[in-house]
Every structure is written in structure tokens, then in C-alpha cells.
View 1 (tube, rainbow, N blue to C red):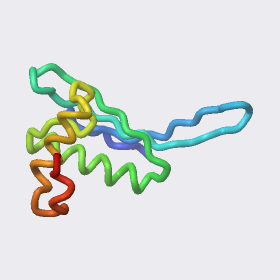
View 2 (tube, helix red, strand yellow):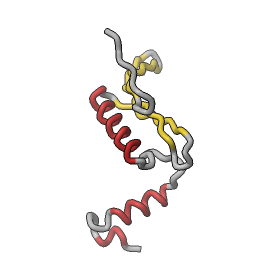
View 3 (cartoon, rainbow, N blue to C red):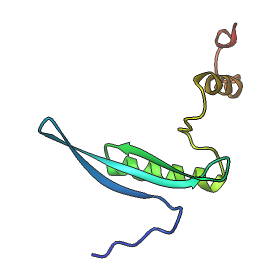
View 4 (cartoon, one colour):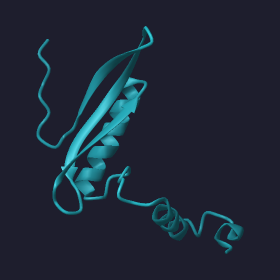
Length: 101
């Protein structure tokens, strides 16, 4: 059976097997390349235990790429900035004590 090739910037899924102390571990790897905020290509790799989970994650990554959103695992963000962003977005969903200073 011949596998079809994904188009550029569509992402891919592949199975990766590692051996640690004589025991084999297999994971599914989701990989996608998309432009970051500065326009440079950025590669994202996410590992999942099941192929179905990897397919769902790839679809979410594709949706984020199409919408032009920043990657979820952007390492340039600090914990403080992520939490402040979360607090601003979650004011309707969390208790008022969460926002207390």
C-alpha cells in the first residue's frame, strides 16, 4: 500500500520506538511546521500514546495554523504571562477569590 504524501504545512504523524533499560516504548509523534510571530518557520513535536489521540492533536494543530494563532507550547512565554492571560480570559468562569490579590 502506498501512503499519500501530506501537502506542505499539513503536518505528519509517525510512530517512534525507544528502548530504555531493555524495555521498548512506542509513542505516536505529531509534527508540524508553521510560521511563528516573526514569520520564521517553527517545528512543533507532540507525543501521544495512542494513534487516535495523535490524529486529534494534529487536527487541533492544523486548525491553529489556519487561524494564525500562536502555538500552544510557545516557550518564549513566561509562566507569569500565561497565568495573567488565563486570568483575563477566565473572569466569567472562576470564583472571585481567584482574582484576589
